[in-house]
Length: 247
Image 1 (tube, one colour):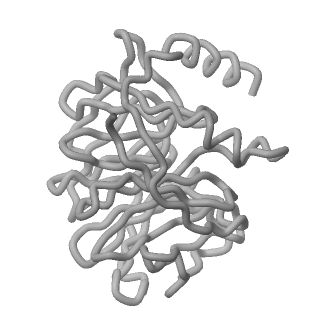
Image 2: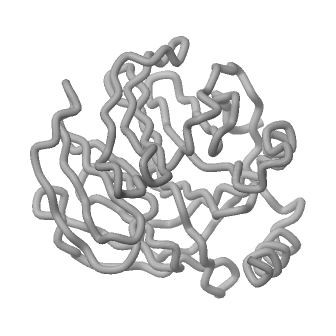
């Protein structure tokens, strides 16, 4: 953990005030403080969230207008749930260290398939052609959305140096947005090269929600294409924020 803290301190020092993407909060919604957020996405006017922790992991469907819980599906009790992404009328989900993935029917959250992968599962998103998966390393894997077989990888870099701890992902307007674990930063990544072009620094929101729980880190990014808003939250945070990006 000390090594992680040192690496993140270096990253924050390198980024600092150079985080170019401006933001402002335009809406605040309640968030379940027992939800250890691992994945987040918006589809068809609904907000989908996956949570972690062994024995507590689940997938939730909420009303976007007020975050009211509509449906919930628990994940097998011996697994630690991770990222989720939509594929048509289905949801694909990852688990942390067990190499087990699941396919769920979106309308009722019924499990309809499984798959496996090597290494750890962290974040997941879709660019409409491929699933994009993080595993805690600087690499992002691109997977066939139907077979979940790996197509290729890119290495995430900042100033030519690999960036570790890439976590929750969201595809926004031709770029990959990514939480960096234990940091207040969201990276904007070129999906062709892996190079980070810009950052969002959400330190004020982290300070507002972290409290004494050091695991209550920023994690969870969902793009509302219709409203052009970026929704963000964190593990066990009491709030979910809708952000307007830009000046």
